[in-house]
Length: 305
Image (cartoon, rainbow, N blue to C red):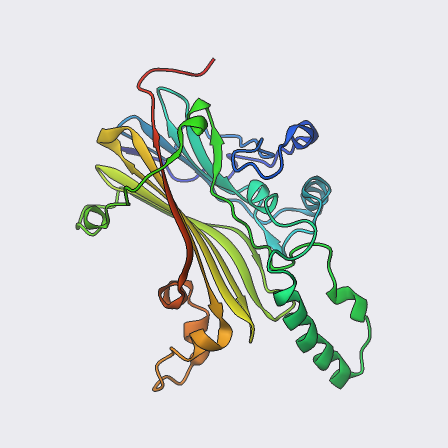
């Protein structure tokens, strides 16, 4: 039987470790986490040996922003919810997969744009034209030493020895099971960060999770819109079938030009922006650039030291 508990408004605080930064191995998906959540006394919901912990807090204060900036080495987004998280935990073995803003932003490119400057150059041209019309200066501010779109390849923070057991698989998330009219025992939608890119679009990372009697599904979605330039989505889904003691992790990258997506808006609409602001609609229009699914078996006994 599931037990449900609302998110505790004071259940976590950002704890950033410089020691963890020094131990980090760059490029490793399972690198050392920079985030240590403080969990509530009881989870948001427990079901079939699994516990879900969620935290929904206000945006960071100035001291917390300074601390995070010094650690991840890039300016943080305009709206940063550094104390928010979603954690899926297997109670008996201690394995966890969690999602938080700190570790997600740590995977943003620190030294330029991964697209070879395409987005930065396109944005810069538009920005310069606007500045020329207004007679302003400060042109140097458009060139940033990091990926200013905050694009991240974050696939979750793994804790426990099971991280070594993730392997690529041909198995797919069983959509037919998710389409069943099963009761939703628990649902949460949490924003990790958001930035309007200087009024030129939006960059947002959010996490949704729903728990049903026999399974759960989590979606961590990065959504990027740079006006007149590009749309980009990076989805990480975690699927757990409670009776099978295994996880599927699906990572999908989608991208297309702004104009290509705009052409797909129904011609009869009067509000084009309504579609362009909808991540779900945009996701259905974008071609898949990359897709990989991994599986991890959960030990039935405690394997942690």
